[in-house]
Length: 438
Image 1 (cartoon, rainbow, N blue to C red):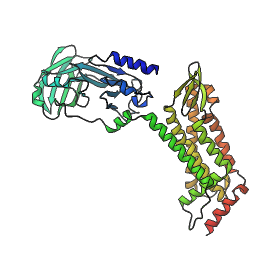
Image 2 (image 1 turned 180 degrees about the horizontal axis):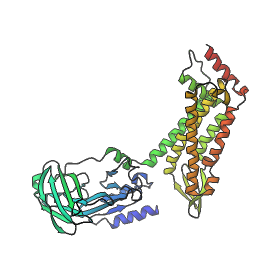
Image 3 (image 1 turned 90 degrees about the vertical axis):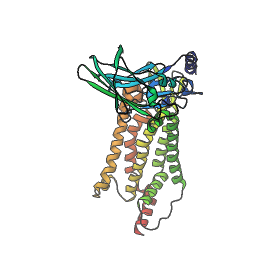
Image 4 (image 1 turned 120 degrees about the vertical axis):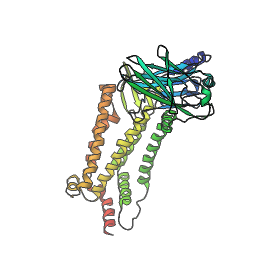
């Protein structure tokens, strides 16, 4: 709440400024904030410049959108690996920017007319475009700029002349472009022979708008913390409901051959009705939701305890956000596959096989992929222990029931199921044989 009050104060102080630009690391979609919310506080800002998601590993080269209040949210690619940076300018209170790669020259930014996609009547005096006398371009390079050619709708308008510094201008009549949308292109060359072409769509009319990419808007505008929380709870509930229903549901009588669905149902009945498998899976699911995942040095010199719903550190509770995403990964890529794998083992046991005899069936194309997939997921879980150690230290590795302890307990549980006394499976073996013989 203290941080929100500080942000509210900053918003009030900048209320009477021509423009305000907000900077932050995280996208608003990944930030937890109490009412009225971060987007509402920064609603008077022209743009919010941020990072964190960057380009999603190259999947989304452009992550830009506009808040419902009119503020632009402009994600920028990372500097560390991809050397991305941004320049922006205000030209007669009209905001323009360019996302660039370091080392690529010349650098070009068209400031007038500005891009229609990033125009905001709420924050900018867009009517000034109709009264402007010159096209204006910022262009600079390691070598001197020799040519700045301007085209609109493919028609060459002429060479922009150098005004001062990186500013180049070309006289124009915006009234000639007062209808619909138009495309402006600027081609810049320097004395070293390098050239750069940039273009965008503009319009002199305020009633014409362009929409941002739908996926980019979804990524930046969706409350991912709430979505992750809902998905996490739904996965947990579905797994628990399946376990409990099959635990207390009477075994149905199947007629005809046992297909894949019937065999899957049969194996779930076996898993849910045997105490060792039922309580193991139930305990793992409940512990993923309620139990501490690890205890370690959350921040330097401060011990903390991590749960699915948040982190306790130094006497403070930090509400979970990324923890729910980690929980979803834990459920989808280990807990549920382990449950399915145990069902498959129990099915093999009901067919009368133990670990050695099931390998002698000769059905290697069916058996090996199952073991291989579980092995890969187990290796992923081991790697998560290594990642935990590298991030939070040795203490977190040693006191991590959901990572280290589970990694050690999983082979023990699998061995117990493979070596389970046949007498405990007697009823299920008889049922399966009666189905196969009918």
